Length: 128
Image (tube, rainbow, N blue to C red; front, side, top):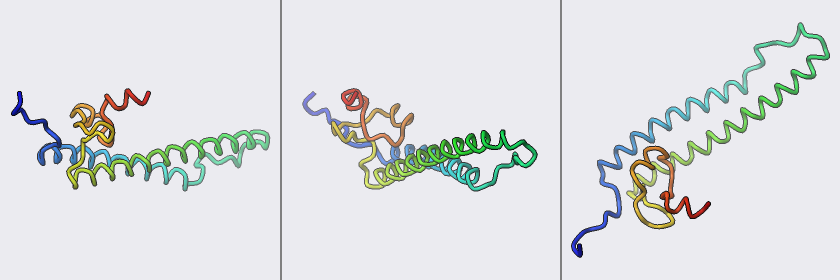
């Protein structure tokens, strides 16, 4: 037991596997962000020219609410992209997968599910 070494970081091969997962998620996230951005910039395809004035007010309110929701989704997507970019930096400097609270390695299963995480389940549970 005394000469058993505790693994303090993931190997280069393991980091490469995580990098591929993150790059794929990053590609998808950027596509989704572009789709959200284009839906915000394009005018309403369902024109309200042929509807009565009474309904136009309701539709304008609905369109405003929808734009707000799309803006919120876009903001969340931007934050997600930033977190994935930060994870790539951690891979490059070989600190990826180390819990910022406990200093222990985060389980591979957790990193595969949430590749941008900086907390182990142990640390995450303590927060709640």
